Image (cartoon, rainbow, N blue to C red):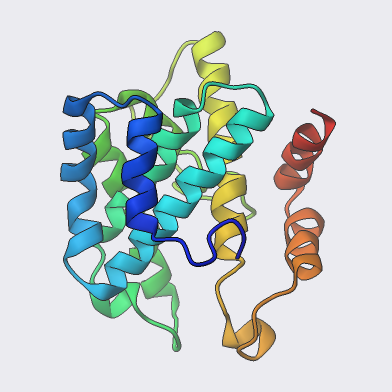
Length: 212
């Protein structure tokens, strides 16, 4: 879907690192954190490409809201690194999904937090929150160390977590789902309605984006 039609996502990722002026040391850290997702199995690579799209969408939202682009790009590119620790039998499952599978899948957020926090603490604090805004949000308990004092930092983490949730869900809705649509891509109107009608948090953040 636009703006990713006929785009080499890996090339786009490298180009973005240059455009954002990411330091070589940070680029190497990002490569180390994302390599298990990007390069070990085709199913994991699908989730890596999802992360690239999310990071790019986050960058566009940041530009639109006149925010620093890196505040959404970093969490976007790193938000699913924990999925590299989810068994392929679950990560690649397309039918027969059960609660045990769902519980295993939810663990990717805490795995990601633990992997990212020692290296990129702000991004870890953002990514650990991005699934908490949905109706069945998780993790139910945030890490013990995740209690920033009220103030500008806590507010920025919360805002970036909400925006990350928005772009993550937006990209996920573009996947072809045989259960929802019988194997056809969702239309733009269907995606809009799914985001706005069923998730009050996204309705609120969407209004914020449109008001800018």
